[in-house]
Length: 281
Image (cartoon, rainbow, N blue to C red; front, top):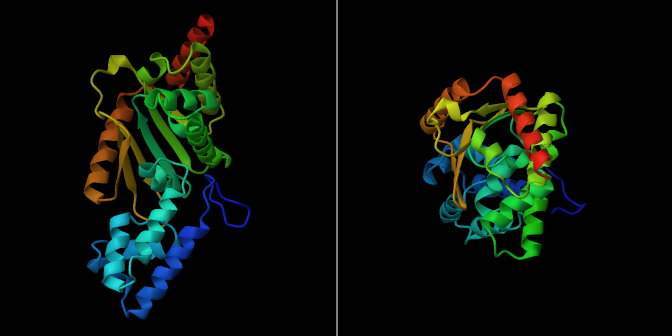
């Protein structure tokens, strides 16, 4: 976690390191006499992305940082700094950039087929998720992962931004994660956020048949940057910024939304499931 000396993003991660990365990138690029577009072509990304790296709006992937080093003759400086900043995050390494983007997104749309999304999870539920996925993990590691997940929930502190629209599969409510008490508390938390109108929550019921989306998907839009999509599998995740692929995932999400229950019916089902878990403990 960041100490008090640096600027802190909404999800709790220090921004100063990435801002320094960006300022150094701009300095070295200009010293080499390259425009953002020229450097982008050489390292296989757009000039717009180079601009976002330089302002700290977006983090580069490690392979891009390595190509920057090759083009600017910086002897591995940017690759080492990129790797160190990624490793300093409490988030899983494959999720660190996604956590950063959550903190600056204007809208986040997500489909969750297995677990309640991390930004809505209670501490007990998050712990049960991590213990299920990593049954032999040390307690200190699990504690740090839970802390990082709860830290991301600072995006809920603003009353309206980002817009959070989530579709959860009915399976998320029916498969117990942790004890009945943990599920009861978690579903009450989701219901509370839904009633407060801080989030838009829909449930994709079993009766809708085969889901269009076969796994977890998160779509993020920004005020001054292109949209991105994130998909997640077993202990791995992929951040996508190719416009065609993002568009296809957005279309699939729209079909999923059309098959989901209304907001009112979804809330009623969530509250009913919470009551059933209450009866079990």
